[in-house]
Length: 163
Image (cartoon, rainbow, N blue to C red; front, side, top):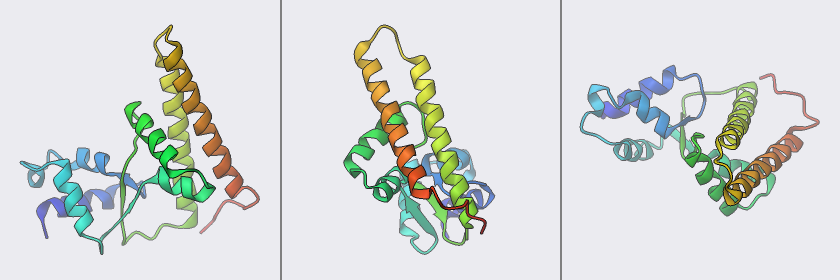
């Protein structure tokens, strides 16, 4: 097994989150000996080749599919969030993890909270007066709230998962 792959697996086994952004995984292992002389792109290429070991997801795309949003709009939204510092992009999970429904639900709730926090922080840091940027940030906040409402409606009426 590639030593970089071994370092990634070890890091993911210690990670409490189910789905870890590849960028965060790279940050966790980039100073390790197996990562010397390698790049994040190398890591992603190695991870993608190991289809029996890892699952991949783009959470914004999954959410868009679940609530019927246009994936193209979600991708644009995701790029803007990433530019504001919110973790976005490909996430990876070890296939050997068997999350409970409660863990999945909790992770979704945490992701929504981080999304809201990133949007609020962007709003507070917005330059003044810049009407166009303010309009764009308001649009992002509005889109985030709409997505959150759709996800909540999807789960409304269902008791929080216990297993």
